[in-house]
Amino acid sequence: MRRVTYLFAAMALIATACSSTPGTTSTAPGATTTAVTSAATAATSTTTGGVETPTTTTEGGGGVEGILAALPPELAVLYTGYQGELSESVYADFGPVEGPWKICHSESFQGNPWRIAVTNELERLVNGLKAAGKVSSFELSDSNMDVTLQITQVQTFIDEGCTVITMFPGSATGLNGVIAKAYEAGIPVVTFEGAATSPFALNVDSNWYRWAFDMATGIGERVGEGNIIAVEGIAGHPLVAQQAAGRIDALANYPG
Image (cartoon, rainbow, N blue to C red):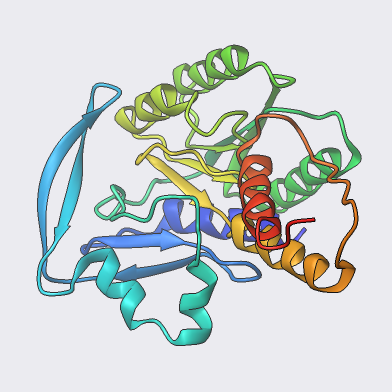
């Protein structure tokens, strides 16, 4: 349940700290969420879901591109083929929220033992925060892979005044509108195990493309000619799509 701990670390940063400089947030396989700051960026703005968000351009090697270029080779390689988007955080100037906090978790599926184990771990961690007087309540919803229902459930969390919303997004793009509404209401949305493409989501993510690419490459090198059966997870889930892309690209190097 290491990733659940990362998720709660991100939530704690949101609830207790604020930053005065723009940052980018991302994760790599086996790494915790890391916030880094950059200089020499020029900001413009775009509108997503009716909410204005800054868009940065790079000047003199700054911005996200400059940060990635400055990483040590052993870290830079972890971003190879990454399917998500890296950008400056719209939460750079987000202020601390006074507790106790109301934490709301939006599940897209509870039909396998791993998802149930994650929920149990979330509840265990929340109970610890309750005992410390930092959390008032924990709300849970499950859309059972119905994206429209998940949107409705997240909107209910917004209407209820949740302090933070955590999420297993059932779609990489389908929830972007309601995530923007949460941001407009001052409620951060933290996703994990499958990133949302909204600039208003804080994605605790891994490079699943690279993970699958490396695994399929290893199989191709050792098996030679033969047939491979790929058993995928939940159809349409962002993580599954990223893994499929990595596997397909790797096996293209081993025809037959």
